[in-house]
Amino acid sequence: MTSGRDFRTIGVVGLGTMGAGIAEVFARNGYDVVGIELAEDSLERGRQHVEHSTGRAVRRGKLSEEDQAALIDRIRFSTTLEDVKSCDLVVEAVVERLLVKQELLRRLDDIVAPDAVLATNTSSLSITEIATATGRPGRVVGLHFFNPAPVQDLIEIIGTS
Amino acid sequence: MTESDLLDDVAALARSLGKIPVVCGDKAGFIANALLFGYLNHAVSMFEGKYASREDIDAAMRVGCGYPMGPLALLDLIGLDTAYEILDTMYKQGRDRLHAPAPVLRQMVTAGLVGRKAGRGFYTYEASDSPVVVADALTPSADDEPQLRHDIRTVGVVGNGIMATGIVEVFIKAGFDVTHVADSTSLDDLGTVDIVVEAVAEDLALKTALFENLDGVCKPGAILATTTSSLPVISLAKATSRPQDVIGVHFFEPVPVKELVEIVSTVSTSSEVAETARALGDRIGKVVVSCGDSAGSVVNALLFPYLNDAVRMLEAHYATADDIDTAMKHGCALPTGPFELLDLVGNDVALAIQHRLYLEFREPGFAPAPLLGHLVMAGHIGRETGRGFRDHSGR
Image (cartoon, rainbow over all chains, first blue to last red; front, side):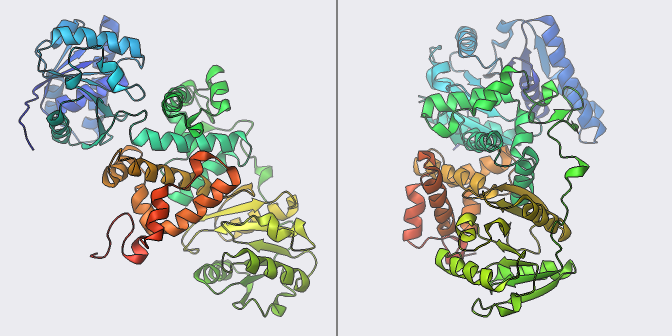
């Protein structure tokens, strides 16, 4: 079953509660993460979200301080969307508006490598409709994490039709 | 269309995160939300129709089904605005009336009562983003604590099944004098009891005849209670000359273990009798919820349409039974998945309850899923017969 697609670097666009949680989950499992928020203050809130969330894990004895530091180090926080250029998979977790998500995926389609995968964390929009904004609908998937992402263990994976 | 091996690769990626992946098609709500939000919307409609209080709707599902949260408290956590969006998208895609957001949801969203994040939704919270519920105008006060308006010392129980013996056990444990009549043809011993709880087979003719006879035997003022889970209580009340004293007292099996009791008041039940039944439920250590006399009370009316939706999802080949069970247990923290539960309660029971719900409400979405009927016809009832949605013969 392992066709061997190698995901190493993961982009997460939108670092609200959901996006920050997703970035944390990937970083905690050893992936290099590029976390994007377009405004400095939102980016800072995203970073704080990861710090607070992992800080709670440290206080509960579920994560060592060294591991927490390494985890945060694995996330490169940036306000420049182009920084996801070398990512193998980019997950968007921006506001639930079709046009916003389509515009974002259109831009990501131009930025990432042709074989990179674009994923949306939408919980109510059509993956297929979002994917039509790109030239790679075959490499767009729904990756539906549940809130809070670091705690909830289900992920729904949705293909476009 | 998504490249075929990509879904496997992404599932492997999810597993590398310590997560449990389920794969499904591109339909609004996917698996977990599609099944969850129909149920949540139904609970909102019950609240909106004043069929039961918010506290009782939530307690019924927590205590009756072992859910971690009641549906209205969960909506406050999710956010009513988010819930509205998801339901609205689901409705527009599938045109299932049951997904059309309940009118009160829109009203509450417009009013800014969007849940915990606003400090106010179905409940009122200490502050924005606080999980601590504080009292508001809808909170029952200490004065609402039910009292025994009728003097209840002696209890009669009719029936010879596990339900009847369980009821006898809980009343004896609570210190009541109990007269147990296993055979409903010898009711004369019930002439002096203060309340009779009937737990004979779920058969309208049998129960109607029993109520006619109890009416003749029992002293004036005695309460006549039925444990029916599927028949209208009012049709039994009509068989007596004292419909004001007839009430539904719906226990769950096994009675000594299950804490919930639903008290069903008909249009004729007196408020003193209803209050007495609630107080009596408290005395025997149960969690008591009150509701009106329509099919399924609270728990079954909310539970079975959700199970039926899961069967529809399966028969549409949208996802596998395993993935649907996984999604509901891990995505919604439910104690059992819908197909595990159906095999446990029995597809015949589920079909009968769903049929009654459909006949009463005539909601197209309540019509029993054809697959459920086919399994029953084939004798695939569930664990009881060794096979239901899954094969249990080897276990």
